[in-house]
Image (cartoon, rainbow, N blue to C red):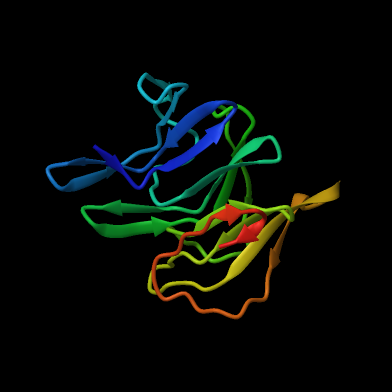
Length: 173
């Protein structure tokens, strides 16, 4: 079985990426990519993606691309590494590492697309839960540092555990 994978709908398919394969209570990190049009018949799109093995990453479509954010690697239940990488793909098969985000390496963050851009909230670094909120916006024109801007947003809350979020009628819940 698999857990902690990234899952998203993109181009009328359900995609599943990375996570951990669990056998005899031991997790083995993955970097494969699967898709399905009906939820029953799955196709292995890539058995070894260009991004490294990871779980607890965020995966979502934004601006006609897939984005994968953060994630971590655990072996035998112990943390090996966390990422602040941002990867993107226009088709789910060819991936490019866009940039190293200004936010702290993390996994388990919540992510959502808003009318303002792609937002990530919280997550966990190597030691504690994080309470920051970041927004990825597309620039009007490409500059020397690319097409994207990360903005740290002000907020009035503190995260003390796992975080999840959803959009409903353009209101963040």
